[in-house]
Image 1 (cartoon, rainbow, N blue to C red):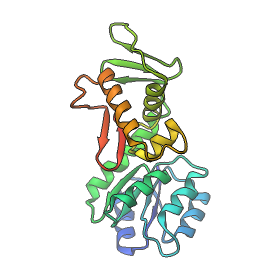
Image 2: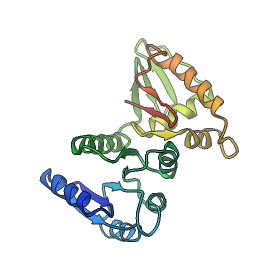
Image 3: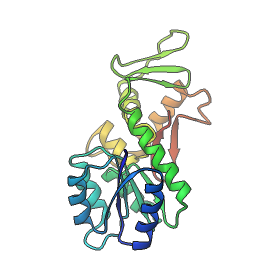
Image 4: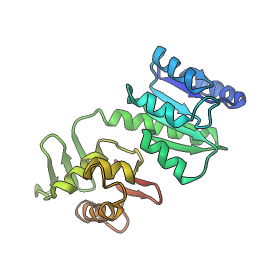
Length: 225
């Protein structure tokens, strides 16, 4: 049974989520503060965390950082904050997706299924199909259906590998820049746009309308299998 940790200090939201999740045969644990969330997560390691950012003791972003110190379980942020800065900060800390309050339960359930599915995909075999090409992560090789190899530069390969290893996850520009180029390049967004464009030209059927290497305006990028 999939174990869900719900972290929110609004009793009506917690109650609604408990009813809906238990009705769908999820195991549900709840916490109404950051401190309680970390304790419950340690006692009952979750498969997925639904987390409000506005907690009474400390910010939900700190909870994300605390969880990311020991678990890769998907974290779905649920918050009334609509500013993109808050969303990017949560993503940078390690969140997987973001749902803004008020929300529909059907949307939330769909997002949950998606992040759980993506988490399982990340553990699959290291060969991923991107358009008409197969990307072999272990052999570091990209091959068309015809058998022809696609040559990627080291930077293109590194960027593609980071995206593929987090299928469906929204990665902020800052995350990608630090991961691929290293500290000190957090504001080099031009580099990222250029190399994403190069990857789309080499891998997408229609680079102007990508279906795998996607841009989330003002937020970052995601790889959609």
